[in-house]
Image (cartoon, rainbow, N blue to C red; front, side):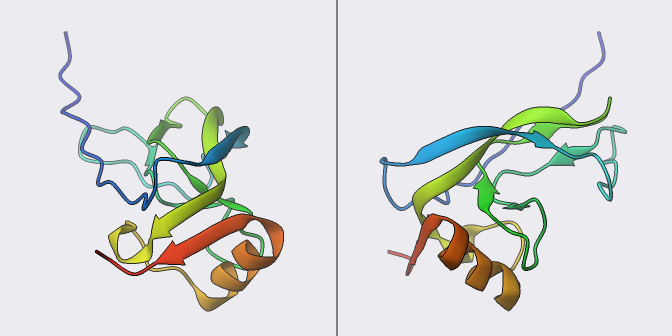
Length: 107
């Protein structure tokens, strides 16, 4: 059996109350990791870190075999400093306009 390592997620939620919907997570522009797997990390803006952002990917999603369904947060309090990528200003503006994603300072 092949060992794909262990999943490690940093808790970026500031509250246990959230809403997520299932969206098709694209495999485009996703770089393979050391094990050859293409993983979209939890906390990644969806569908991109730009003005198209409508939510935040909730759990790691393996897109090695092509696009896959994944949970996307559309209503949540997020600890921005804990996200795996820095949010672009356009993504933050888009999230404010297209979702109920809110940001809280680290505690």
